[in-house]
Length: 122
Length: 110
Image (cartoon, rainbow over all chains, first blue to last red; front, top):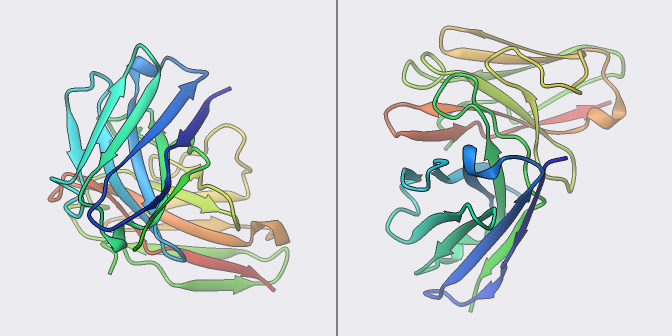
């Protein structure tokens, strides 16, 4: 069974940094693209970043580009999101999501982790 | 505002049928596949429909997706109380080179 378990969330002051991790299991991790998607309190879903299976190709939402860096360690089956210069509007639950079928029309976000809460506040 | 437009809420009685619309443009829905996600209260989202109208293994056939031009729809038949939650459409936005979601639709089973 596929499992995605996020960690690393917490309270951080504006301007601070935080690194999220996502431990993956139950599938050939090194062959599948991965996403981060966030959800602000009481709000909808927002795509944050994608990293291809090779770890070299990366895409970011305009709202985080230049502040967030996505990476992966295929030897550890782990996905990361390094977040810098955090703002109150970055407060959200951050979900790690597998993306089978990336690059074609058969893509899907499946499954989603349980999420980790990041709170940016002084 | 979200790139994809969904109604904020829909409601219907048990055993009835409801549809949720998702409106976009030629650079997103018009040229890319649409997925639908269900988020039950306090839970992570779950894939319901992919590639416009395909159901993943394990998803009830009470759910169905369709697409025409720059709009997509999710239909839920035989409504049950545990269908209550939020539903989101998503697709690739070619001009932004990223994924976009609808604002979400809250389903209430009366």
